[in-house]
Image (cartoon, rainbow, N blue to C red; front, side, top):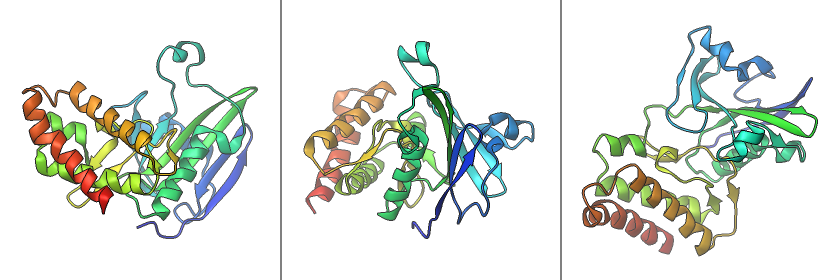
Length: 246
């Protein structure tokens, strides 16, 4: 799935861009990270839920998703979309770009990273990333909202998450909006603050607990705890445990 990738870095007046030279034959102009660049051309639409939202864009290099990094919680009131500068490779955008490349190198179903940038201003920076759009995919949250989440789908999701965990892929926010399904595969998206770790029960179970909270919050247990356990959570965990054991 991963194919050949070739990360190159292009300095900019206020930062740098890292991009996949196999997908983008030349260094991208910084303007492609600006929503207005796509919106005025009619080449952008909102891309589902998420902090600050994201844009689906139609670009010369194909269908893609543009996401600006934004803080959440109380700290957002103070810093907004700014992050403390600790080096280029430790920026949220460059770190996620590198992680996605590594995960694809392990044949895990994650979006192809196309380009990422940071813009530094003194002790802080702002960041953006562009990834390949997963065609014909819907989120687990959408499937739940449409009443399509059943034991079979939950089994697929549990089996897929086990594949990530067995490879040490820790997702920092494994919620139902970040699980995407196509006819053939289950994908995980938005690996901001994710990491490759030594497989360990602690963080793996924390990932699953985060997904369970997300499903409950979105109404998966509306019909009752027994129905949720029987039709969703037990099949998901059962498939997960079986795959991890093998």
